[in-house]
Length: 305
Image (cartoon, rainbow, N blue to C red; front, side, top):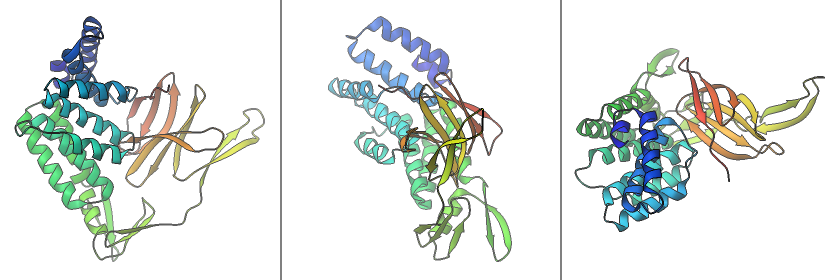
């Protein structure tokens, strides 16, 4: 199962690990903890955020008690990347700080650098972002895992590719996300039209904006029954199994949000790697469209106790 996951065969790997966990049973000890570590990695790769943090915490403790510090650190890094997808950067930074990396561990080093990449992007720190991207690329090459090398290449393209437009004195040019971050930290006054912000010398001021309404409408009469408010631009709404979900997109940030149907309060937010346009649900799966790329992605809804 672990070997298949490193080759990118995640569905087959998941089936193998499930079979191994059933065979080991609850008293499987160290082998069971290692299976849970590999299963967590597959859940991250597949975008399946339903796996619980509780067995991961237990597995980390069991691995550390057995002296398997490398797999314990690896599992903490997988959990850190999942925390970033769930929009919890503080948890990700804490997990990163607790992970004890061995000097010669390119796979774990790659994961650690990818966590630093996302944290730097959220802070708009171009120097840390560029450094972490380079380190992640070098570590992935040393790990020599094709799926990991491809993932790092996609992430580098996202931040170093020409995905933005900068207009100055009437002249427009394409730029990378890293260049935009550097410009936002300069003494120049920068108007971010996508993020609706004003930036200069590392300071950021949001434009005044009206809340975006979400209307509940009677399908027969067209009458507005209820109006909820969102602080972000809404690109899709779906109601499934009593849960109200909506997608957002502003600037470089997109999320899938579960909100209280009565008040509109955000109960859960899943950060998406690219712009989201449109949202539909069926069973335990959310289907979302893409803005920058013409694709439809399936995202499994997190389970709730």
